[in-house]
Length: 276
Image (tube, rainbow, N blue to C red; front, side):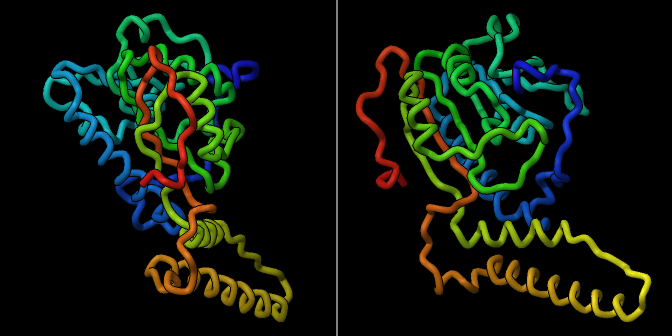
């Protein structure tokens, strides 16, 4: 998404990510994807209650469109926007959210609801991104936004940021987006579980020629894997929860529900500590 060095045809290197339906079985993903799915699904369900009958909905960075079925109900009109076409060939518009927008995308809007989940970390020009989002939204439109705070590099070399909520707050204030709801998803313990799960899936096994070294190394590898698996299981089962405070200074992902307030810029700042 770097407007100076990429094109729509540039291939992307990525870490292996499972299908969302398999997230609860993956050692790393189960500490983040289920939380994101729950938060976004709930936000979509609540937002749909207040949308006009023929509302237009835009799914940015849609990929294989896991939320399409939920969004495309009743008389709602679903549109999708991404940097590349998916396997199903169902992406409506191709382009970058931090570059000049495709004229057809603008002409199809404005949109009453925009979904931007796990995309912001791949956007290089954040100010242009937020400017475009406001342009695409109706004057009182809603934006559902999530972005990771603790997660390995992915879609390299297009992974640019791990943003704090305060950075996102400043961008919202600058472009007239009101924070209706904010949550930090996950805790320090779940970051620990995610890290152990990531290490489990990225262990590099070695097999030296000397049989003595081979036995020693095999024992070391088994011990290390046992240690990682133990930590992972303890976090997954909640066995460590009572020993640590559930602080959220170190957490897995940001969740925001925003409203376009372009005619009435928000006054003051948001106290994130007081938002549920």
